[in-house]
Image 1: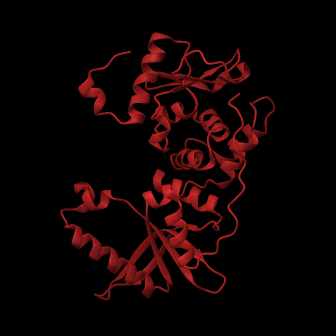
Image 2 (image 1 turned 60 degrees about the vertical axis):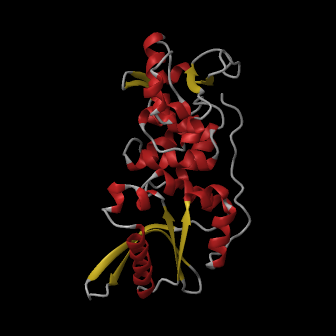
Image 3 (image 1 turned 180 degrees about the vertical axis):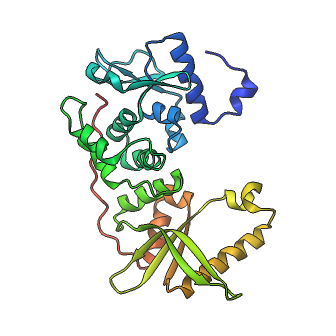
Length: 291
């Protein structure tokens, strides 16, 4: 496959997967895009780094899925009796959202699979109960308890993939599951009532409320998000936002970046310093093979 270098260089990893997938299906109509590659086709939230290798995941209803046929293809097994979960989307033959989540849940780590599930629920692509029923069926595939576990945690409340990834890491670190998208009604300096919605909030046994906010760099540099304001003005807005939350009874506001989440140690330190209790890291079921 070939593409103009200038055009190709402008694409992110997920867009490249979408292009390769549609081309594969055009050249080889029997191709079924699956797993993390199917998540890219459906536009479900997940980390772009999962596609840095350029490997495309395809499903096969026969043969040994662990036998590599090409260095850029990863095969997973799709039972022939479940071929009704294959459909067409954007000129690509792809596993439907239910099967995509099922395969992502059993082949990816919890923090990589969870954003896929969160966005699918948020987009109404799958139904929680129907999906768990699917996982309970016989012969759907190995390790079916893994996607069922991920779905048991997903609520579709995260506003974007960054939030859901952060939530998964917070859980993996051993912190209690926070409330999401909680709204606090505050009185501003001008006396007007204002509503402030926060990403995460913990209501601790001693009565304290700790709020967690995921800060993204885009809000400081992306013109569509800055509204023409300077960085100093945005920082001042954030300071005022925190002060309003304190007036609403919040005890601590913890701001962390996506880099803090990826590195984990800075995120853990900030939450511990704010008094969020932390037990032993969660022992999560892990994927074993791709069949």
